Image (tube, rainbow, N blue to C red; front, side, top):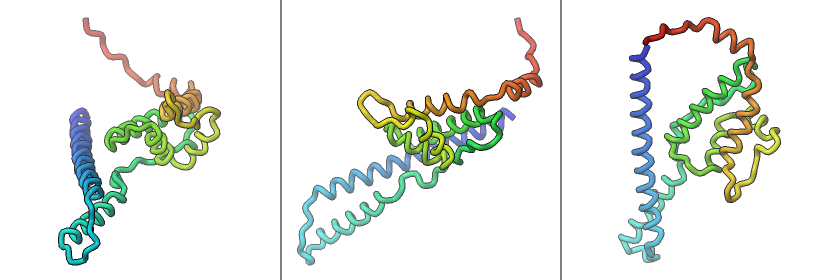
Length: 179
């Protein structure tokens, strides 16, 4: 079991490294696009260099419009499942979201909140927009993502059932103490 977890962890680390390389390639292309925008492009049709620059500029602009992390995905959060386990499911889904945000190199608060709501699905959006104080406007000193997470944590945490928690706790065996 531990061997499988280690292999899975190695696989995830390798995927994150590949994603980071793709991000760097995208950033290099973006810098090239910005440099080409600063160059003056002549209207002379006979100027081969101008045509070449226009062609490269067009291709870079097309590349820039593509979604950066289209191959990454995250399952939507099921708000309406078994109510006794919604707290545990929320914690697992939130952990997966944090991994995605790290892999996708999303570090702006507003983008994090947008990713939270997008990948969470329509049911999570409905919950979020009905929690008072969850949808705050971006302002200096206000972390909109942390506000959203804390409000959703507070919403889902009380829904944990003591009966369910007892059911999952009782079959656990205490490990022998080593002195």
